Length: 160
Image (cartoon, rainbow, N blue to C red):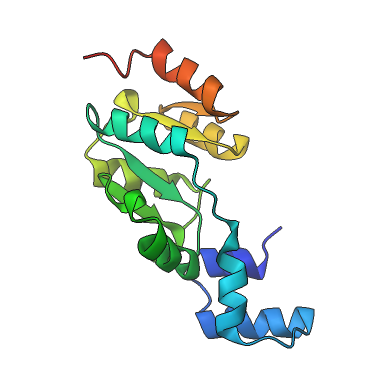
């Protein structure tokens, strides 16, 4: 089901249009800045995953491909700058397409200068993993740090 939140993530709605839609739907007596502050409270840093991503970055290209909106991107740039220290950060709202659209994976590959066969992709949404696999990308569903580390080691990605 396509929602106006998806439209916002896809960059099809402006901040003002999205906030107006929220206010209409929820009848919130809240200011836009206050709403954005609440909207951005979803982020929790997982130190083990960040460290693993940095270890992978030392040996490989690492890109972040995210279905997200401009408020979240701005919040991440300000409070979680490490996310932009990799080879690419591709946000759906900035490229006007979303996972599982095959075009966003193709853009990610092109941006990272990688071929599908040499790419390892992880996502917590099965549909996104299946879309990547259809393009010939080695992909797994994220089920937690330990499981992911097993998948990384199975592929020998941290070897010197």
